[in-house]
Length: 439
Image (cartoon, rainbow, N blue to C red; front, side):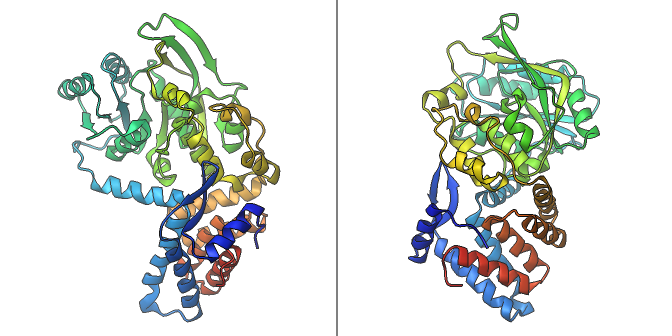
């Protein structure tokens, strides 16, 4: 059974009255979503089916359960949307199979994007790679420069958004075009240091990680790299990073757009959140909250450009006081990873606008490590459609004290896929009871 906080009791009453709500927290409030009654009814139908399972209706009921999960858990819906996007796009590249796909989101960076592109080709990599640049409906000469690069550089492909979609959505779109198993995001006003890509890829593979962060960021002003503002370096020295490190250590790479990661980890977490706010930090936490570990590569660095006129998305979000939106969404969607005191801190966070990340550093404590390890193993089994393994590890996680209705939904799906209908029905009934619905 679940502990029901006071604010959830109010929600339970609203659901019982068939108000169209989904119990997913975002921006510190509940999100209104259509079809919630359908979600509840689907759970009831699946539970009823478990009493008298008939093979000819199995797929239909499995789809109902999948639909319920998509409606209740935003990340699952985002994963589905990304898969549809990847399947719908027509790829330009057909030559060979790249190991790494460099992706460059571009918006009004005609003065700097060539610096970023040259720094990729100056890596002199001896492995197959491609470069994918997506112009986000720029109003300057960025698109013309990219089309020229497509003629000049090998394995360079450019695409253009029909309208401005902002950086997170453009990153997702660029990665959807990618054919490599590894993705290297390069922001269109930054410059990679020579040899950093191979260093990061080797270290990431040797340490069995899905992400590699830069150890050091060298900030400079405008167009002159000799105009050094300051250097930001990981403190304390950290090599392998998980959800615990990310929330307490100073790791500049987690908030930087430039990083290396597996395409699988991007897809399995539902990509970059496309809400306003600090999308790079949110993506780092989202990957860690799904059990992906990162390698902070010693000796790696890049030039990070600062604009004195503050013409970038980060400063625009600061000005509009929305820089905390996507970080809040990620932390609240995964609040069950933290202990009771930390969840209270999250719920009552009073950080000044745009300062939530700094405010929370070191304050959040994760739940039992063994329980989280079991949960993350369940996630990996789910990713590979190993539902027998997923059911085992979800069960282990709950037995170790990790209790949340979203975890139970995934456990029910795994049990149903294994045709363990008794457990599936019991778990669904617990969820319906938690929602104060007579199931």
